[in-house]
Image 1 (cartoon, one colour):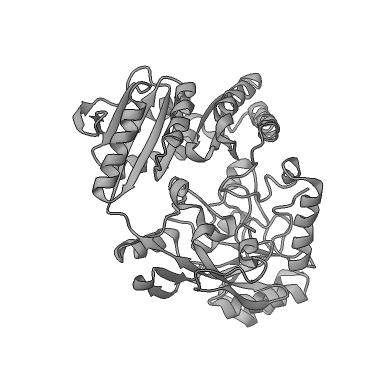
Image 2 (cartoon, rainbow, N blue to C red):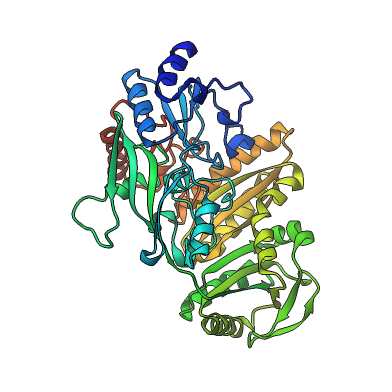
Length: 472
């Protein structure tokens, strides 16, 4: 459809000032996957002001056979919010109201465009906790987090975003605004349509508001960094933590190459003894460390302190050193900065968000290193060790065609390793366009068929975020 017709039709629904014609360099034509070469070509960008306008836009597009690409904060890493083949980018950024906040009932109802960090802040200011903490929380929006079922370090104890959703408001084809779920705490009355929409990446409907359950915030959260000699000892430490019945809120890992790249920005810390007591100031990452675990225990102050002491005693024979940050916020800034710091090491990187069974984590990390060496690329890995969620990364020169091609070959071999070890192609970043067609490597043929039938049931014209999250 011609741009003038889009402008006129959509402008009549939301106001002409809220319909944009994006230039080739417009941020609405890409998300965080642009470094992988994923760039779209939207015919128009529409910014509805409320859920009713979202429904009107979807209805108009469905009637005129115009593809619709829902968009949140644009932090996605797999091209899920990119209009690959034209159409309308439907940005939810103006849906910024918190419709309900009931601290006494532990719940909140934000619209899709509310930033994740603001959801976390509002919960915290009211003595409550919203557990999911994806790395892009400053920019990402809660609707996008639900649409990708985003996770983060604290998902180990508190679950990914979907675990906090009790209900949704969404626009379904051909343009109907519906409420699914609610505030009730138990509901097994029908098929779980809510959970189908969670993680659907805008391919089944457009989420406009989210009913979130919250929890009372823990009194204390005590973090420490445990350094080990190599990945073998590190993976054994992860397994030992679970076997001992400990339940950390975070159990992240960094391998040796990641430690080396990020060492300069490691925050000030002090030694932490096996009994959990602070010792002398520590001078950075200790010599000989080839693996690190970031561990956090939370609960009452006594529970967090006791949990950390038990963990340190458990790992005392394996650990080179254990340190606690002088400023816990600085530790999390360091952890959150791993992605950009690694990217800067050579100018670009190609990273895979994959998951392995915990019992195969060491084999997976070793296998990925061997794959990277075979393709003559420098590699590193970090992630959420307690869940087997690995950000398997190769560093590349963005000007080198050979290295970029080799990185894609590494990805192919990595997905083969995932299938071999019984893992998953996506842990928290979705499928989008970069991983489409790969689901069939881990699902049975009939399950893949059902995946496609669900898509057709929700979106018979195939206009909702076309080309994304495809099983084959």
